[in-house]
Length: 206
Image 1: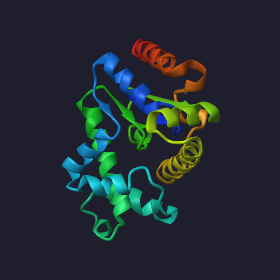
Image 2: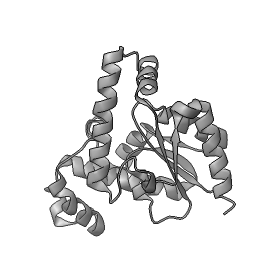
Image 3: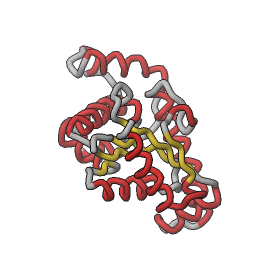
């Protein structure tokens, strides 16, 4: 196997669980919160700082500054004065690229599809669901009451959409931003896993 699978996901859609099961099936590394530890180890940032800025939106007017700095590297003069949120983004960007260099894996969120957009061995997946099923899943997985689950679905998706929009040239959750979009409400967790596995196998034959 040579494929890197990236998974974008709506909150409550089961994207983390689906990604974990896909990685387990193929016997490859799975990176969601694990990416935080990897980024911390390679960048020198403590995990708490990275978690505080993980997939959080930031000021859009600084977008060009961030990408210019990424182009020139960490030694660029204006990197020193860059907000910590942007430094964390760049550190995660590098960690994602290094992880993909090491071999096949499954990476959840963090604009991984954009970080790896120049590679031809990457399959980009988006997991979504209907409101009722996402709220039910969030209640079961995180122990939320119904209102808390509903609020978190709205809040987290807004954060992820803003973060993705600031740092990429694509639209979060829109079909043409991905290779495969799957409704976990329609197929269930295991059905989504099976579809991704089949898609990977077909992808590697192309």
